[in-house]
Image 1 (spheres, rainbow, N blue to C red):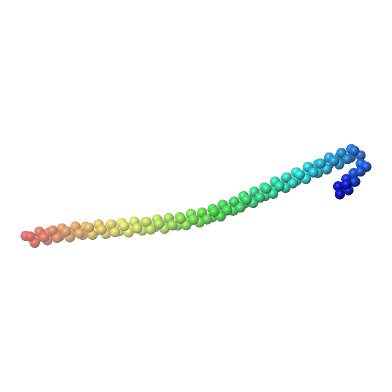
Image 2 (spheres, helix red, strand yellow):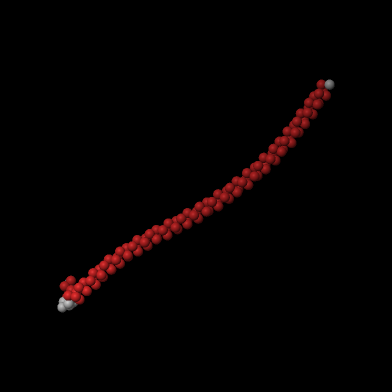
Length: 120
């Protein structure tokens, strides 16, 4: 088969044959260069897809973290409100204890006074 490909070159001058050979060499070189560039392109496209996937994963993770952060902030707000309520309740109860303590002391004094009167 290769003889048929070369048959058309018969009878051409050496100078023309040299030029044909140079052109064929240049075509082979360009084909190899094209294959290399195609391989580079495919490699770069694969890397791009990998980066796109990575960015998408990071976006998803970011969204999840934002939701979790919002949830934690709401929980902190609720805990702060509960703390304030408990603190208020504690102040009310301390106030009640103070009042009752004063009443107790007053009653003790009354009892002491009455005991003193009974002794007389």
